[in-house]
Image 1 (cartoon, rainbow, N blue to C red):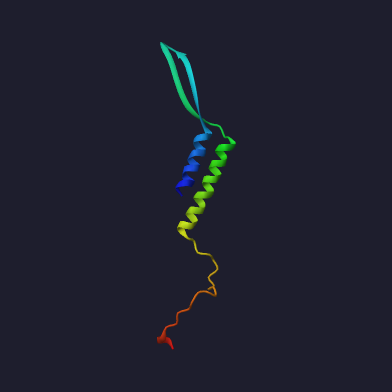
Image 2: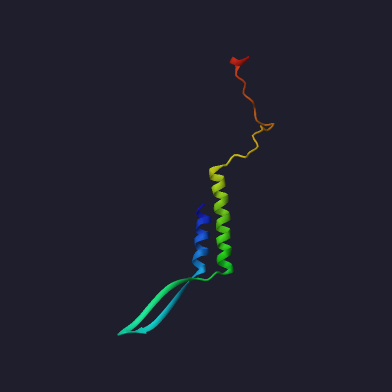
Length: 84
């Protein structure tokens, strides 16, 4: 889960470029920075890989049972001696 979250965050960080602008203003200089989203192949790849890893880890952590409730041949059935 942690690796998936890390890769997702890394992809988002790659996709948000810093845009810096210096503008002369009234009585001084204004220096502004903002983050502009600009998608790149590397950023999207990290996001997809992070989502896949996070989804697999969450699935294994929750351990969702399958809809097939039939017993396999290897499972032993325990019979109560009281019901005989």
